[in-house]
Image (cartoon, rainbow, N blue to C red; front, top):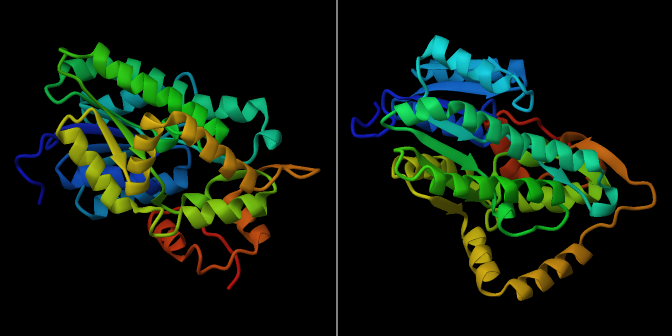
Length: 321
């Protein structure tokens, strides 16, 4: 049963990118605390499965299939929320894409896709929902950026650029909305075990890029349990925290970046030189499940991440015994 004291009990939440992974877990956590939840994602089949899953757990959930990068998406989403639940109280900007590869293998369109998905789409949706949020006694915006929105991780440049922009907008939005009753929380997660390595897109030498990224996203010392992360995010939003940094490695990285930016830059340059080069004929936009077959990475290396992906509806890799 939901805790009666929870600020979001009986409130309506919209969570983007919620057919799988962290978005689905945030939606579930909100529902467990008594919120009505509208799910949103592009994959109609996965979205329907997510809705059925939440409703089977007793949650008041609905779903709306859309691409958040489309210009009409904000108005269509809000119409769906209003028709099903009434006014909106909580917006969680979570939809995202991960593109992995060296700069030499990336194209302008990769940066545009990242910015449309993780900056302009949240911008448009936030502006569209502000009238509802201002009228609510629990008006809240949560933007899931990344530690990559504070530290420029190598071989993730489109992702990093978009997450920097999203973090800046979210932090500025909190200042702009001070005194209006609308709370804004910026979330900066490190690596989480959601199975995201199978949904990421790889460029350059996909197998080699998959090898380092999938291992980092699955190993327990570097990555965080996603269910624990979802609980922490909802708790931070309930308490109106301005910022949440997740994973010990991310917290250390942010502090080092703040205290010694030049040293951090040198370390990141060393990491970049150790990562795979683009190759003579770089490939583009290879999905993680396919890149896994090219990697030769033993399945035990990504076992924790793969199990998490199976639980949270990510695509499944086939990367050998």
